[in-house]
Length: 256
Image 1 (cartoon, rainbow, N blue to C red):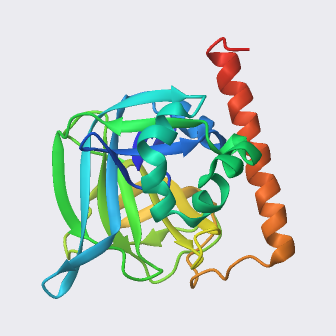
Image 2: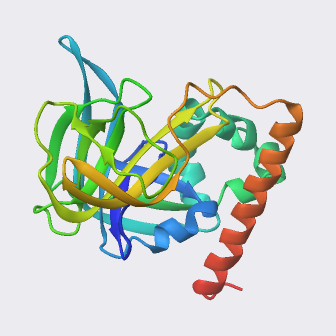
């Protein structure tokens, strides 16, 4: 899911869900900061892993206005979306697939539900099929306030944030950047989906070259599953971040 924030285009890997026939995501409150940066009220949803289409993989993007709804009790999430997420996301199966699990991991149930309420633009693009592929987001002309998504690749993604990166569109077209803010990102996950690693380059696009001013991570092979100690540490970090987000949201909404 991508959107335009005050700092330019931004994006998160999410679990795609559907509520009443509309694309949506149910973000744990660990992502509260990201939600609060969606000031344009619009977003683009992109399923980029791809489905076979002829000899190629096709991804789908849909953009338009979104409804952002805080579900601090988790009632809507449990009633309408939990079953879908349990099927798609093994960590949720472990943390919330039963009443006992939800009581023990209560911090995983409160969500912010972001729903695409109207599709103003829908299009296909090449899927990410290798680790060097990324989604490039920049401000599009239509609809206003939504980033345009393009699948790109590069020979390498240097870790240094000031190193320019030459990009190629996977569809063979030209990027024709004019110095606008741009955000390139990708993500990998372990086979059990417990370990998600997002990497990105944030900067400005000139022609076919991204000039980043901020960078995090790099494309790698599929991450290995956590070991026992790593799993416990990750669980505690996720719980801490979710609790922080819940407390901050409650304070913001006057529910404390």
